[in-house]
Length: 205
Image 1 (tube, rainbow, N blue to C red):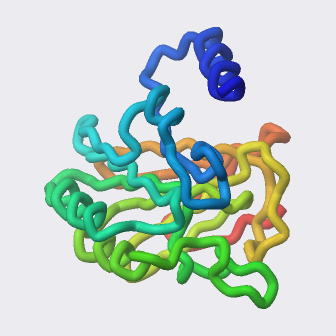
Image 2: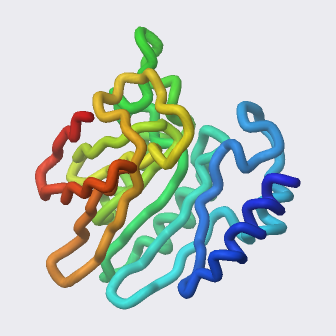
Image 3: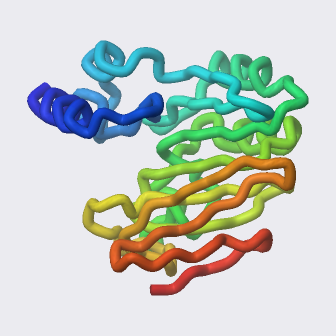
């Protein structure tokens, strides 16, 4: 609780001029590596599955913090992604089969969720989602899977993971949505900025 209070007080001092929207991660639950509740998170930030429209885009946040996506969540996602707008999806933990993001040595897929994973990526493809953003893995990555662009941006400040991802560096990502699609710029802690091209890339540091 004290971490939530300190965070919200710090955010208040910054006085952001735009809404601050969150995606629940496993460390926002009572026990970050076990099946547990998220009552404190919900009391501070509200629903863990939600969507909203802004201009020509629909933004969707889906809760993967329990290492799963349920049939109920998939049915909800199918409904909210039924729109002609551009579709941007955010989740914390990526599907296990999006390697090498989720590989640790010979342990394949342990950094991702398995329950509902294939159904999740199939739905993203069927609904022609423009982008899916993930955190959880403390690194950066871009990959196309079955026609959908997936972006890993988990290098916000915590120690970088010794995982299968080549691009491990601290950064934050700025994404813009315009008539020509979604464009991202990677900002590194040394003040550098690199635009992410349309084709999948690796940005080595």
